[in-house]
Length: 128
Image (cartoon, rainbow, N blue to C red):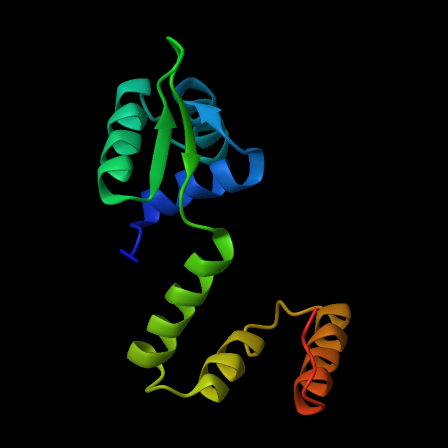
């Protein structure tokens, strides 16, 4: 899988959250998230490039093209985290977790959920 750029990830987030969408809808959602406005044609060009890269596809059966993500959010997250662990943390998941937990933004509830996930992994089960 090709690594999406930051802008491509923003677009994919819109498609993952809302499902298949028009360029206008994606552009409007991006502009809600940003301080600076992105033009419609810029969003259209990005979606066209993402389709060429195999990140998105489009339904051209109607006048208004509908774009959808080809890659899943879960697969993308796994790929990006694996690359991050390998390149920034020397392959150490422990270093990644310690850095993430050290940012003081982790709630007590999140810590409890993480502990449960670790317990489940140690028991050989699936995490939820």
